[in-house]
Length: 552
Image (cartoon, rainbow, N blue to C red; front, side, top):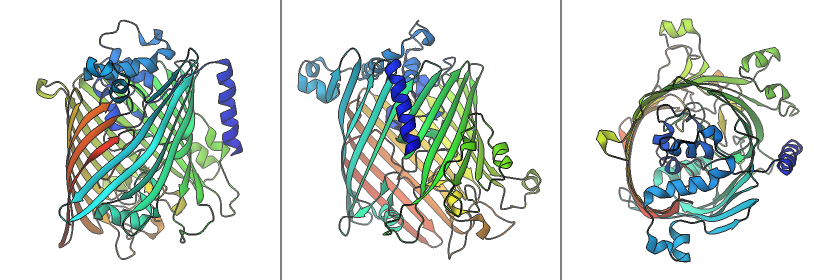
């Protein structure tokens, strides 16, 4: 806590000299869909692979085609108002509703706004009131979420953001079994049993950020991040729970360099009712994204995961505060037992409507054994390949995406279970962990306030069974591996999972993403001679400020 207090005091002190601005947007696919096409326009020079996005990047993207003022000449203090205005333009807000206070608050404005020359404070409700039925199993479920979102800025360069969610929910059968087994709602934290069918859980996020200038942005908070241009990420995703972090973003020339320091938790102790704190572990991440010409970018990723030693004395290792990339020499120099992973993220824009993207994750590998094709256990890699198309067939706002993910057995595992690439009983990358392949297809269409999206995914996973480690569970030690050679994706209890869903939204208020929605989803899970199906029909009203990944 002393370390965090020092960082907070440092930023507050800086804000007394240089004034501030709220820097980042919510990490939400529904928020991003309004400017994803513009972010990937040939020649704009923006960096699209590290999320949440900077607010200024979203504004610069939307203004790139028509605005004649270079991004370098725009004032940081302009971006808050510009963003709220720009995302409302395509919605064609009705003058009839905007003439009354109730109409403006419901359809276009923040619930509460306090504005002055030197500060802005916005308060909005966050909620999810959903009712659903599993028609295949004749079972009902619901999500009941209430909360508040506060954000704003003080001066021109200092910003803040905080959310709080209180939840009471029951879940469809496939998800209920996961929650009961792990005591975790995916991405939303630990649960307390409310009654025989429902669970109570709460979580909060928050951050303070300081934009020194267009070259340096600092943020301290508790939240999540995502690296990549795809629906999934094999490097870092927002699949797991929130974590404390300190982040530095440096923009120079065609380069964006991100330093991310994280405090993580391991929840694998034997007795969940034990009052002792969960074990801490830490991560230091570097991500260097470089624009190559007007159409391509390549990002170099590396991270190290470490934890306290056997005596509990080791905390945050100051050696990993090295702000420059390539942690492997640091790890080697201190004779470290820690877990280091590296990766590459790449994007190529064929034109302003079509792009290709991909990732390569390297946990461990030996080229000789990769070439031999003998399935050596330590050839631990993940590969992603995908494409995005905008305004498909000339239809404005019609979006198409296809993606393949492939992760070998034992990837993300470590010899010490505390060193695994995980947090809060969830993988830090793909929700399926390892030992799988997956294909995903997404179609989206927007018309003013109406949104239609459909998704289909097919995955084959090799689950561990009978206490044997086949490489899917990232929380196990690779020292307990099943075999030295002959390892292949899908080994173990081979399971085929198909997910299909169709979602219709009507956006009521764009500034805090309040929308009415209806959804139908089909899930099929096949293991050996057993197939478990679910047909989910649900609807309600909610705010969509973060992603929920229940499609596994």
